[in-house]
Length: 328
Ligand code: ADP
Ligand code: NA
Image (cartoon, rainbow, N blue to C red; front, top):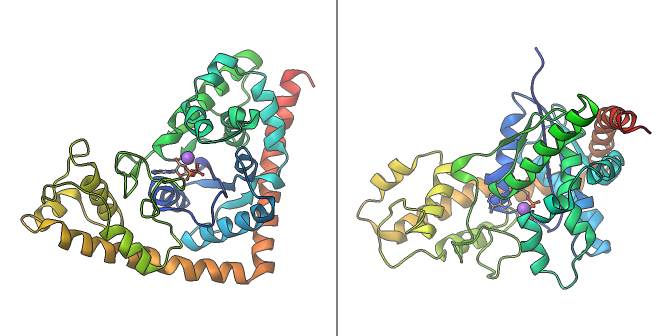
């Protein structure tokens, strides 16, 4: 029996992934390897849609790949590659751009958020979701594990796949989004009404996977909560505590109900102290494992070259089909 095809990507835009990336997406990437044929991509073409430093981009792609390996992406089972090594992504993006309405593209809310933070907004940032559509459709993808912030882009992928198939005949698999509800949006530790992101306003807001364990502990212990002292799950009224409970449940292999019972009448100090240990114990080993993968330069190169070859094999077949359909 054929197993489902999975695709997802992550940008190499910082030196370390953060807990939102991990719980929203990367943990599912690792888990889905058991039941699917997965393609995982470090999307460096996406990374240049905002200001970037060319001196660090290449290294960040390698560090990103090393972190994915450290988290448990297995290159024997999954295809791990860097987007710029597979030119079909940009080529299909052009075709999909010509199928996308300008108004349709203008409705993408992430563009509005991201462009507001830039001094200079590029056309590349505007067409970013169309490149993402190409990324997904190239692999005849059935499931896309991502965080909640990507839902709208996934809907665009579905719309464009369906429209292209209707116009030209069956070409692309229509992808389904794969979002885990509890961890779909991990919140900023300092401003729990916002999502955790590397562009957090506070240095304590974003917990990086490569932070030192003591730094992780400090960030958890100083997380903003509320003036009650009750460990109770209520995302609207108590976003800070509820976010910490979601993190605890996910990393500590427990449930919200058990946490409420365990910390009844005990206040936030104990709760945060225990969560700090859970986080540091869980994420602490990732740094050392990442360093090991980076230390063996030849092996990392070999994995990425082989990954790009495997990806191209699939991507070139889909692109050839699409080229033929549009009349090239
Ligand atoms: P970033 O959002 O930090 O720029 P990416 O855009 O490369 O990172 O996103 C990589 C993956 O991480 C995506 O699937 C995205 O939905 C997910 N993600 C990012 N931030 C969060 C968050 N705070 N909570 C849950 N998932 C997130
Ligand atoms: Na994002």
